Image 1: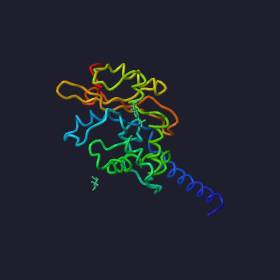
Image 2: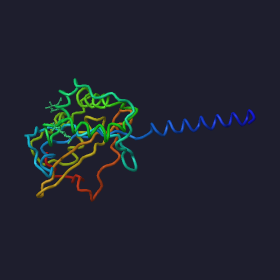
Image 3: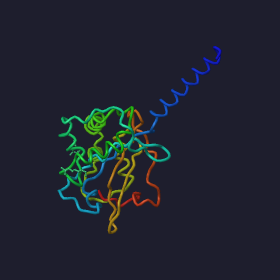
Image 4: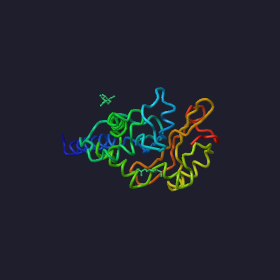
Length: 227
Ligand SMILES: *[C@@H]1O[C@H](CO)[C@@H](O)[C@H](O)[C@H]1NC(C)=O
Ligand SMILES: *[C@@H]1O[C@H](CO)[C@@H](O)[C@H](O)[C@H]1NC(C)=O
């Protein structure tokens, strides 16, 4: 093999390496930070919740997501640094397993395995996943109950318009579009989840790209939304 052959060979191997490395790190487009309203979650769960709920939006999960196609799930664990015990008192408050308060750990574990693992490299490891959520909810004040309350929308069980809810959330997220999830039972529609979206580096909020579509059982109507 001549020197030119050698160079082109090396170039080829190098390009291949770059391709492999980049394709294995570019796994998602943005984050969904989803919070669930505890009483609504229990109301719509097939089996009733055993424990009383708080009138609070608490964390469902932080989900690396794609603009088109499905969202990534259950990715490879690249860096084993497990959740620090010291985070648990805060997690129990902001991220309780509302369906079974005797087993928060099972809920956290499912979320980390299914979603958190796909957040690499923004999310470095399991501990980072949980620390990030604590930071978002508490330090960065992405507490949906608080954002609504700041806009004078309290959980009084009143019927709301979607526009009022959206304006309230936008006022706490640099005027970016949230994603709402509603569910309906016996002619009453309740607000179940609110999702705030951010770019893949979690540097700023973005408009949530994938709202529920007409025909979805989770689409919120324009009015009469109980919260
Ligand atoms: C928590 O839930 C997990 C998964 O459902 C189960 O394997 C585990 O035994 C449960 N732990 C307790 C303390 O109930
Ligand atoms: C979230 O906001 C609600 C409503 O203001 C408040 O009651 C709750 O304590 C807040 N949670 C945390 C962890 O700050």
